[in-house]
Length: 160
Image (tube, rainbow, N blue to C red; front, side, top):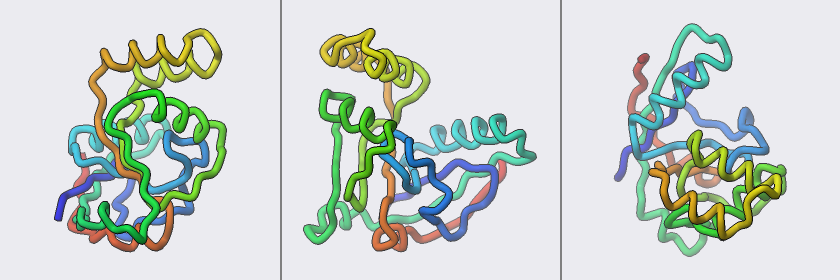
C-alpha cells in the first residue's frame, strides 16, 4: 500500500470523477500525488483561486499492485518526454482518452509555461523537451473511471 494525497478546499472522503476539469493535464479525473508537499501546494492554490476559507489535504491508501493489473488500461510516463508532452497537449484540448489511470509528471508553473509555449507554436517539441528536462517535476496519479477510483481508501484529512 502507498499513500496518496489530494489537495483541495474540503475534505474528500469519497473521491468522485464529477467535479474534475476536462482540460487538466491528464483529462477529467481525480488527481493525487505521492508527494505531500505537492498536495499542500495545490490545496493553497485552490484556496486562493476560489477565495475559499480552507486548504485541506486528504490522504488515501492505494494498493500499488493495481498498477500492474492487466485488466486495467493504464498509461505511465516516466518523465516529461515527447509522448507526455503530446498527451498533455491533447488532454488540455479536452480530447478524451480511455485510460483507467494515468501516472506521470505534473505540470508545475515552469513546466506549464513551457507546455503553453509548445502549444502556441513558439517552441518545437524538441526545444520544449530540452527545457522540461531542466525542471524538477512531481508525480501525479489520476483516476479516470469509477472502477479504479473506488480502490482509494480514505485515511484522513487535515487542514493547513
